[in-house]
Image (cartoon, rainbow, N blue to C red):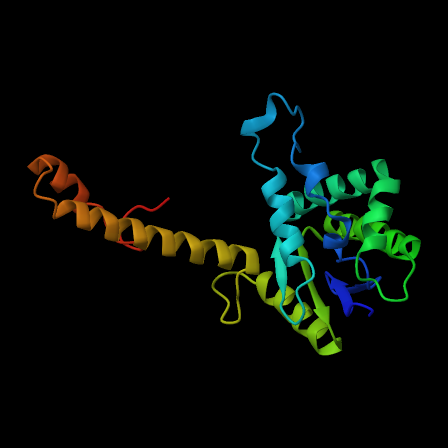
Length: 208
């Protein structure tokens, strides 16, 4: 079965472009770092590629990423695919690609990734979706709204910023609840219970 149409920054790309999961890249990417023995503290790494792989083929939902982070991750995926061509072809062959031969799937995926990287450089943003022309129009509208100033009534954050803000708020709220519980712990010294109580709720006072 062919995957749905894929759109990146509003442009239609080969339909297999977003099917990274067929490559089973995990074994090739676990040590992704500039220096595998020293790069453990680098910010962009395997986790970013894993999150992208999980989101890149979403149907009917507009997704986004910081364009530089996307470029680094997409370039690593492309490098790994080309450096391990035979092994990746075997993994694609073992996947569910219907009547599409593995070499077509591989070439479309590589072509699509290369075009995504080019569009990131050209547009300075990275937005995508899969689905129909209606979904492409939703993608274009989300891109338009994200480029407006925050004071514009139609302004909307890029999806990745919105998702990360929501996660940060949720985690902060959970942590404050835990601190409030500790503040009720009679076994803690009074000064430590006061410290636990004084953390302001999210949205009040300084935040990270």
